Length: 167
Image 1: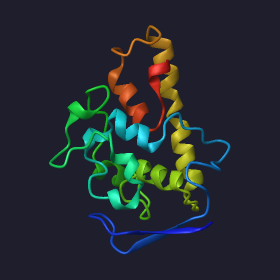
Image 2: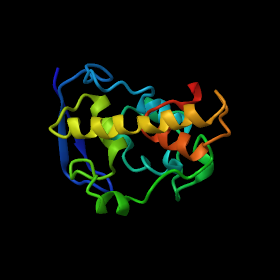
Image 3: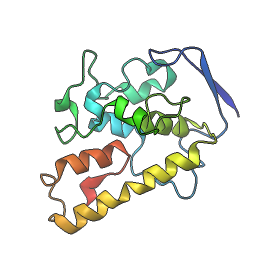
Image 4: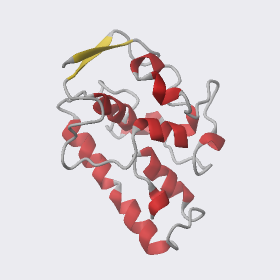
């Protein structure tokens, strides 16, 4: 059942991790994302630049319809056509990056989805849960299903596997 994944990309060399859970299953009970990594990539996240050099690590099916940019971040690829990302340097300065996942939360989520379980899971799930405050703000300040309101907040939620199209 346990699988080993080997990683050699632009941000990690000779890294390996074991997957002990089935792909897409056995999540922590407090972690109930609306979207899979594949769905997020298809909808458009991170200006299409996030996953361009690490395709070998994840299922090829994730990338068939993914909105990716090989050159540079392209905001027009984001679902809400806005930039809702902070630079990686900000994430590092705030101490949000764990060395096992140098790209941040979405990399952690992709690997968690693949079945990896680590000591960092609890911290990352707490960070994911903290994003719910944005759902409350959209519900309070927007007409239901008005996807033209609070686009930056909605794109940020999408980056954290929340589907604001249902709000």
